[in-house]
Length: 443
Image (cartoon, rainbow, N blue to C red; front, side):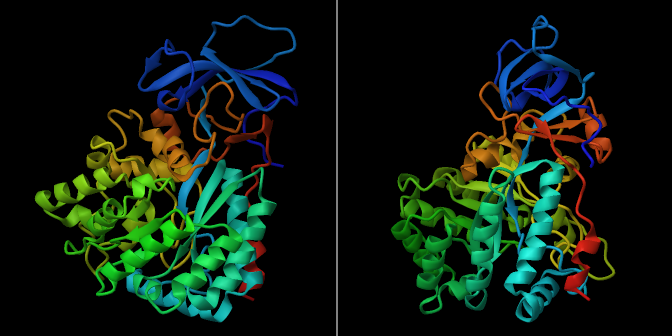
């Protein structure tokens, strides 16, 4: 059993002494001293709940409280991964991307889905992915479910079953996924809404500059309002500066008075083309996004892999969206894992520390670090409605990840593979599932 580097007692009451916490994620005394956007604190855990967060060394020993000396080891709340594709994950061994491009990925996934995505196949791969995410320290996930008509009655029941199986370990949400052209097909939205009501999910689709974009958005907004469903879109996943469906979504949200619907913030993912547009167009779009109250999730690893890929040429653009400019306007921003070992991204393991580490390098989440750690924890928890997640403070669950690294540069320079994951005040088995467990799907 792998339980990380930290020997955690089997005790009802213990105190993590000398922990280093990201200041932006702490609910505790305002007087906690900060340095480099970190605080040194002692964290008291009682019956699986954080009972107190105090400045390190300021609380005397108490009878019945076991001290656990961390020597500056960093402690995060368990991660929240707001944009994944559990149903696509781990098909690379039988469905690789022939050229690494977005069209290549679409074609490879479509062929594999038609040939292999039975309930048994989808369940096996989703279960594998959840085991990896749990071992890495993720406590909440939103996944997108490919929802073309032929797949709806296969993947959604599997998701609903796994949501119940994993209750108490990983909180699961899902959103439908289809192209905007599919969304306007006769009867599709009625079928999709019925499935979402049966299995508990949100409504979403991929928006691109199709003649069906405007009528499709109108139909989706109407359906979501009438059925009381949250919205989550894949948006402008291209480096074409002419792609501006993000602005059209924001304008539709304003027109439909979405902020008054009581259905939470609309989430928009990718938004890559914004980084290729001129300053006037960017400002026009971001003003509408802020007014509409949208929340934005960037997928740095997948978009670096797919965007600006031209055979024989070094990529010139990063493919990520304008999170710094968005945050300056008060727009909630997040980062997430996206795809794992499928034609859209050949790598990844639903390790949100890896996502945050690469986002720091790609998107410059440093100098200063500030509140950027919220992008992988507190912000997606608030936006997606994962109550109680993403913060460390009195009353929060003792769902924590302890890393050996003591500073940002130590944390982000190594994979932290020996991390200790604490759930409900107990160290869990952090042994990752073996890829060989999936061999039966290809053999």
